[in-house]
Image (tube, rainbow over all chains, first blue to last red):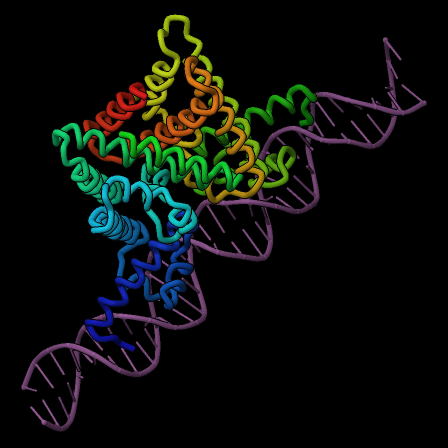
Length: 190
Length: 190
DNA sequence: TGTACATCAGTGAACGCGCGTTCACTGATGTAC
DNA sequence: TGTACATCAGTGAACGCGCGTTCACTGATGTAC
């Protein structure tokens, strides 16, 4: 049953991707190793050929998810049809599609509270991801001094994360949409 | 070993309070019934004399925690020494003390991601708590039209929640303090 | 290039453990007379 | 008001179950000659 080197690398990536989706959907703690391996189309026993522990996988998923999230922001920002990069980012991040895409969306919004309690390695990856996003958003304020743009970007990111979380908690769809809409308005006005 | 009616009521409240602190500190899923009963000074067997299930406790803890959180905002807002209610609320919510008080702070910041996945009853309690906080914050904008004040309050609350979560994720204390500080600045300027 | 053997990705049973929940029991509280 | 009995808060052992992790095994891949 041994697989080729190329297949092994591919499988490892598949596990990370499947785990990322499961973690986001159900929470890290609530997702078992057997469950995430099944989501990757494997049985649980093979897990330890790829990772030393579940915690190590969590750290790698976090690092991977951070990179993936950045690409999405980057794409939104560099859309040639967009007049305003920040507006495009906010429109994209604070959309009902993103709100409803729990397994694919921003890891801060779906796992933020758990990341705050995670181990050193995972939090380091998360911090790195935060800073990268901040830089990306700060770049959108072209006519603003770099350090002011950076400070503003921190606020924008934190606000978007909080807004998405609140829009997911609230049980009234209309209220949820309003939360998203109002945040968009306020953030663009900045 | 039977306890008096008054004692029973008091014990029930003690369990809810202890569970609230444990949930906030470790997460809902990561906190066991035995663990939270021990935190209340009891053994796990007695749990089911007070609650039908862990899920029911979660809903009650959520409802209780929402009320407790409101009192804190209310106190900050009505501080007679404060010139500006909103400023006082932000100063209080976005303080390093609140950030470091994981077991006692805002339930949205510590449990938000888990609340988004919680059952109907729990989410209803959370939605109710959100709306109550929004009203409280909206009241601080005395010279603003009520519906605009309300919309702004939603944004302020969501932003504060997201900011506190991000400040808890990040591993560099200096960066964490900056995140808090910048959000305070931006929210007061509103 | 072909052959013999070591390697190791993946399977599925099994490990100890802690989970949520149940239950027989204890003995103080509440209640009926 | 005093007595006899039912109630039930709390204890701690036990339940089945799923968790993270380990392991013997399989057989295709990689490697040494």
